[in-house]
Length: 273
Image (cartoon, rainbow, N blue to C red; front, side, top):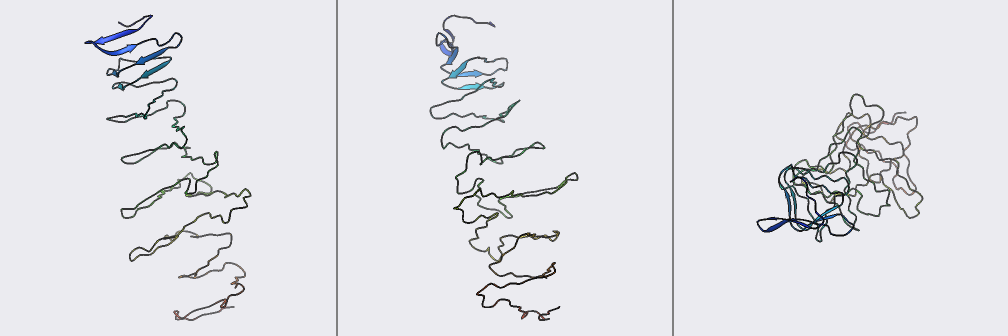
């Protein structure tokens, strides 16, 4: 049959077993309650409801899609799983946004992968983290990574940046916009980049806080503001003072203000006026 109408309960039995129960649970609400399993193994089957469909057991769809014009809610006393046992599980919003929301206080959204987690952005797409709408209180980083390296050439953050032929203006691989202090009286220091140190050098190698190995830069480091070195400044090349006057200033209390040491240079020290 193609149409089934009844004013009361309808029970469909298979060899004496109740496999599908369709009923009216109240006088005014339209509710279909399934006490056992629902299994749709043919794409000619469909379940359509303007109201609520609930099942106390499993809902298995082996041949077609599950479509909801409103909310599709999966609830369980101990949680629930949406699982594709074989093949790919696709969550797709044909129009509008696809939103994953965790509403419980302290509840997280966890993505666990046996391999990579990837996304392909459109031309003007962004991966955007909003930690400003709600004032942030974390002390370990809004974007946090914990990495234990077990391979050669590992990088915690790897950026392959390319400017194409039509690119114009200023380009930045990493752009830290203006750091704004809105008047806090308790902030002691603000750092644009903080490298807190390293536990020890590698076996037979060197450790550098910032390493610029390429010589194609016009300026490997360009600073408009003053640069302060509290340790030794070791120059293996020349120092070019591209100003009319070059000052080396000593501070009050320095025992030895300026030292010109040519003990390892064959030509000594040359002063040219």
